[in-house]
Image 1 (cartoon, protein in one colour):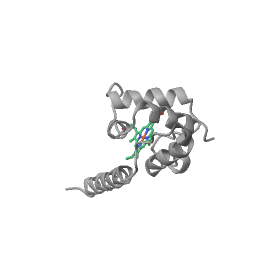
Image 2 (cartoon, rainbow, N blue to C red):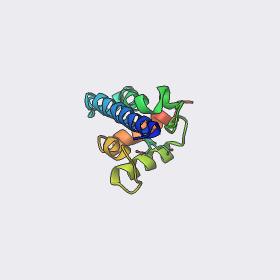
Image 3 (cartoon, helix red, strand yellow):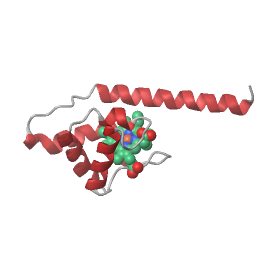
Image 4 (tube, rainbow, N blue to C red):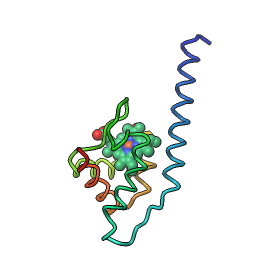
Length: 115
Ligand code: HEC
């Protein structure tokens, strides 16, 4: 195996590890909130689970897309398309499946408001 190949494999392993760690972090978050009055607090809690991959406050410094400050409608539609599988993804389908319509809308409004 060439050195380049080994490096590439190491990178793949590292990426897998980061994704698994992030998924584990998501799994430990409570995902259902009954009270509409708690929406903003819960949306910001839910959004914390996104920042391990998308950067602090959704502002990515790397290859990952930034998710802050975009149109709420765009974030909402994109998350729903990931969830249904209409938009292909590596991890976002699994992540989006953890949220119901109201949670996705709350997340979209919250992220859109972060400039
Ligand atoms: C494990 C890492 C990871 C986590 C955690 C994560 N994402 Fe993502 N996200 C990705 C990747 C990778 C993509 C590119 C699509 C794909 O391959 O899944 C993406 C794409 C997106 C996009 C599309 C951006 C664009 O404009 O194309 C949105 C919106 C998004 N994520 C929102 C979220 C939200 C909201 C959360 C938290 C609930 C979240 N993501 C959590 C990895 C992650």
